[in-house]
Amino acid sequence: MENQSSLTGALLMFENRLKKLKKEKEKWAKRNTILAYRVYDEDIPQVPVILDRYNDRFVLYDKSSLRFQTEEEKEERFKVIASIVIQVFNIPAESLYLKTRKKQKGHDQYEKLDSISKEFEVNENHVKLLINLSDYIDTGLFLDHRITRRWFGETSSGKHVLNLFCYTGAFTVYAAVGGAASVTSVDMSKTYIEWAKRNLAINGKSGRNFEYLTTDVLQWIRDEAKNPDRKRYDLIFLDPPTFSNSKKMTEEWNVEDNHRNLILTLLTKFLTPTGEIWFSTNFRKFVWAIPDEEWKERGYLCLDLSLESIPEDFRDKKIHRLYKIMPTNAQ
Image (cartoon, rainbow, N blue to C red; front, top):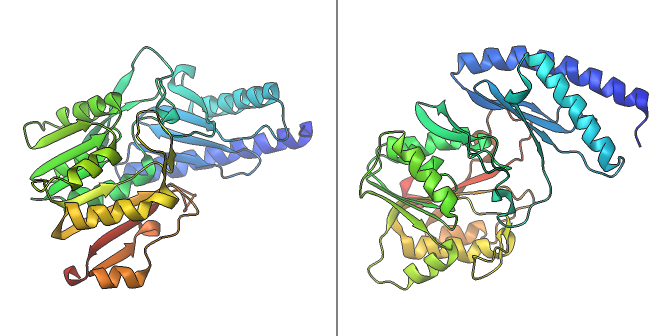
């Protein structure tokens, strides 16, 4: 159990840090026209929480463990931290959403928490996206990919795009707004495919050029790879889970063990000769099972864009890895 005086000292440090961050981040967000961003990113080790802002609503994630505290102490401390956030930002309690993250497996993070949906829009780089802070552990938008989404949209003009493990379709929307010729979005969650459709609709995009498939992504790739008339894509976005043993999938997925076969299948069976694969992972210990020499032999470059793609509001520079796989002659 933590010493009471050290706990009080840590919370006072947190309050002072939050006041400073409020001024700095609000000024930065206004200057860059950003409405959804990370405010506090476990800045003080003794206060391991994350605070995200979406317009005038906030999400507070508890990242502490039970190693040095009981369940009751953890809960009580989190309430005190929440009260500091409410006071510093001068917001009503209902504008702050509290989330306790557990170690998730597979699609557990997509389990519904509430039966009443409370969606609202945020604007990001002139794109509208629907956010839901109350119903799920995740909000529908991964803020750490803000720069990646902009890049992706700028690259999509005139291209046939494939968005795998598409979640709520943010990359689909960016591709569509960026002028993609077509976008195929694949995810096994009906909830998230429907969310992706709503995201596209509020941006005024619709029609046969936008295809949604609710299916096991890995099984779909295996089936399509055998189809001689399958479609080829100019741009593929791939952001798979680190691990999944969902009953909806025909096999257990582990990004460390399975990324090689998946990416080589996409490279040889689904990509156009001048096409690109954008691959992202949250697995911190990720190491390529495809060495540089093999990329060269296959006529491709694998560019590591990880650091450049992490937004300024994220202290955690390892929150994701991002790679662009492109033909050598495209340089």
